[in-house]
Image (cartoon, rainbow, N blue to C red):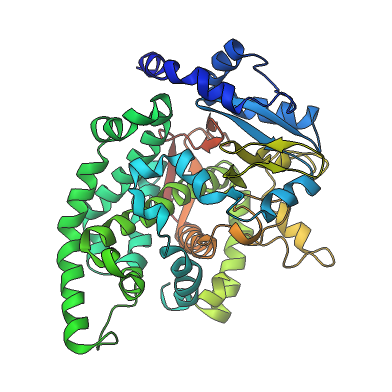
Length: 452
C-alpha cells in the first residue's frame, strides 16, 4: 500500500520540494530532486542512521535530510540549538510542527491546535494537584499490558471513577491513540487536498470520537447541570482534568463534543508516549535484574518516610518556520521548513555521555552526585544535553505528570513482583521508524510474586 501512497503524492512533490529547496543548507543525502525523493521514501527506516551520521559530519552546524513532503533541517551545537529553542512561535512554531508531524488538523480536529487552552491546565492545575492523585513465573506480552495500565492510571486523573475502569472506554482510548499514530504515518503520503478524506476512510478516528461521546457526553451534561444549578464550586465537584477543562472552556469549546475531543487528545499525549517509555524501562529492568534490589531499597526508604505521596515521587525540540529565519551562522530557513534539534545524536554523543550505547541504570544518579548537578539531571529537568522532553519554554508541559505516573507504576511493580526476560538477560531490540523509537510490541516479560 505504501507504493500506492507514493503515486498519489508524487504529482505535488516536485513543486513543493523546489519551493523549499535550500542550496546553502548541505544535504546529508538526496542532493538533487530525484535522489531526494528516493531518499525521502527511505526516511522511516534510515532516519536514525542519517541523523547520527549527519551529526558527526556537521557537528555544531546545520544540515538537512529529505522527508516525505519536506526537507527536514537538523540543528546541532549548543549555540544554534539555543537559538532554535528561543525563537517565538510567530517565527518557529512548535504548534505548527506538531500539527504537521501528527497530522493533527485531520486526526484531532482543527480547534485542538487553534485553541490550546488545555496546555496551561496541564502545566498548572494538573501539576499542582498531583499530591492528591496518587508465585509462579507468568509470561505477559509487555506493551499491550502497559497500554492498559497507563490508560487506566491516566484516566483516573482525567475523568475519575468509575469511567477510568470501564474496559470499553479504556480500550477506545488505546485504539484512538494508536490510530492517530498510524494516521500520522499514512497521511504525509497524500496531497493536502486528499488528507481529510484519507483520514476518514483509512483510520478509525471518527468511530473513536463517536464512542467516546457515548461515554463522556452524559457525564459532561450532568456536571454542567450541577454548575448551572449550584454554581461552579458545587459540593463534591470532581477534582479531575475534565472539571478543569469545563472551568476554562468558553463558547463553542463548552460543547460536549468539543470537550470529548479534547479529552481524547490528552489521552493520546499521555498513553502513546508514556506506554512506550515505561515499556523501554521495563525491558531494561527485566534484562538486567541486578537493579531490582537497590531500587527496592530506595522505594522502601522513601515510602517509610513519605508514604505513597507526591513528595515521595518528586519531545525533542521540533519547530516549523512560519516566517523566514536566519541563524547566527548565516543559515537561512524559509517559511514552511521543519527544523529540529539533533536529539538522538546528542544523547548518543560519547563526548556528552561516556559509553552512550551501554545501558547504565545509575548514569544520571551518578551525575547528580557531582557538585552543582543535584537538580539539573532530574527526569523532569531539561538541559541542552538532555532534550527528551524538549527544552526551554516549550518543554513538555505534562512531563511532571508523566514522571510521577511512571515512578509510581515502577515502584509498585518492583515492590510486588520479580521480573525477568523470557530470554534471560537479553533485552528486545528497539524498533526505529523515522525519528521515533518504539519498544517491541510482541516481546514477553516474565513476572512472579516477589520471593524476597
